[in-house]
Amino acid sequence: MREDELEEIQDLCSAATPGPWFVRALDDDSAMNLVAVSVTPDTGRAERWPEFDHREMVAATLVQHPRYVDSGDERWDENAAFIAMAREAVPRLVAEVRHLRALLADR
Image (cartoon, rainbow, N blue to C red; front, top):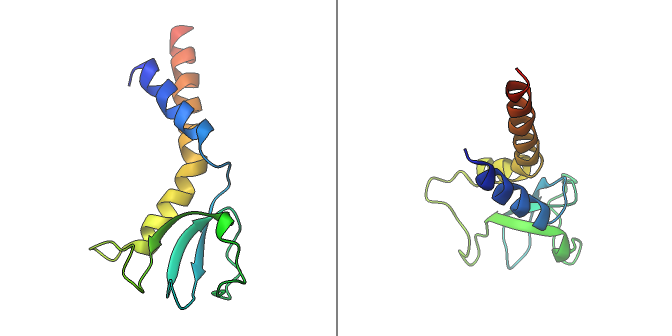
């Protein structure tokens, strides 16, 4: 991976909503069984709107009613977990690549 590619990844990370991100399971009449990525941890209560703040949501991997967001392989929980994890992992991976390159350059 070239340095300009690492820079592009770092710029995208820096521009995104700050982390950490969490998987949230929410439920209401419009978004039945919503699986979302949020800046607020899941409470385990599957809150219904207006008990959750829509401004805390970063992404959704399942909105069932109406069927706005879904994945054909039904991996909405796994996709949400990956998105939430990537917010912290991708910047760390970029830093690690740069660190390892610096170590190799010093040899």
